[in-house]
Length: 230
Image (cartoon, rainbow, N blue to C red; front, side, top):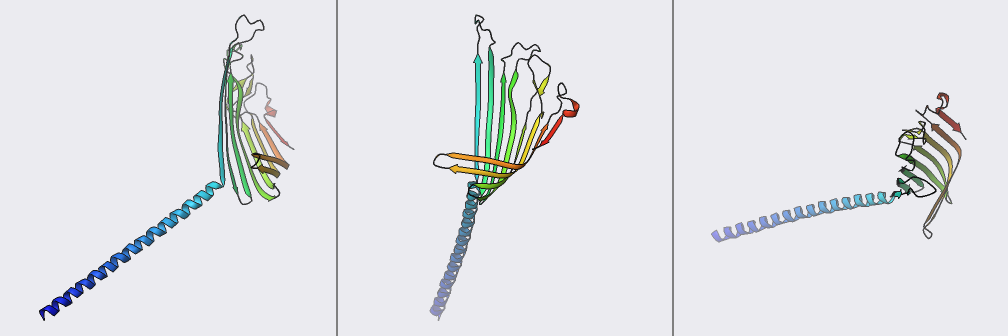
């Protein structure tokens, strides 16, 4: 009788162990399914992010130039020694998806020179370039390279610049401001073989604004803002 009881107890322990093993296996399986689901979700998110990034094209061109010229006192043609510098930056970020295209361009260009070192007003440096510009264009493709498009261009100056040997200011901070907006058709041509991108914007409806501020030395009060349609 005692042996029978021990055998039944042993069988019970074996069944309990098997049940516990089944439970652990089930838990491991559930964890594996959860990890697989998480991995699938991460892969889908990564694929979506990759696809979204493929819609964007970005690039930057940076240039920095400097020159120095020395004119000896014996040079019979005269002239002045000078040092000049030019900084340029162009950055573009373009988006394209289905039939939509959005093009953006930022351009910065600043240059100085000491060519006119004998300026009567003691100015050693003079600006040769002062350009801060942004252009944007949104288009919808209607076939054969043609797009219905709207574009806008903004350009201004940031620094004071004066005429040589004169107190007259020719440009200053946000003076002038040039703004242009157009609505019409844009023709685009792209060739991978020739590495060529070509675009022509035809805008029957356009608006242009030129605004000048704080240049009273040569701009009259009634002409500080010039607006025209064309």
